[in-house]
Length: 110
Image 1 (tube, helix red, strand yellow):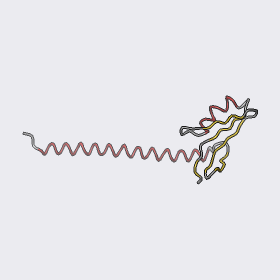
Image 2 (tube, rainbow, N blue to C red):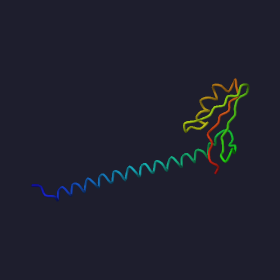
Image 3 (cartoon, one colour):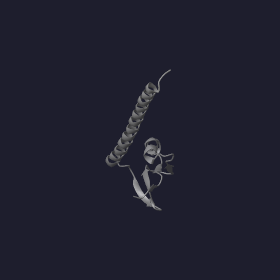
Image 4 (spheres, rainbow, N blue to C red):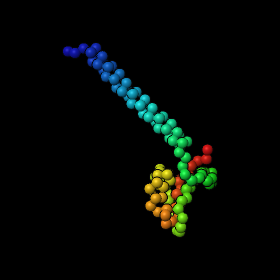
């Protein structure tokens, strides 16, 4: 018959390994989140978006107008994206013939 001591010893070792692995995973996730937040702030300071922020009903709205001509096409970014992603794809294709207005969703005033 096996004694309870070796089982308890192996269980304690396995628990420590699992706890250590969980701590490493959480620390890596936290470090990655912190790095991404700092990188986003740094990049926004160096490369400000084109266009302007306009106050609207307690929010700020980002608008960027480009091109000449008629009609004016208004593109509204959605699904968590902003007009910067949308504008890079759309402006080159249609700004030569029409006016293009890119609008981002409202953001809280700071």
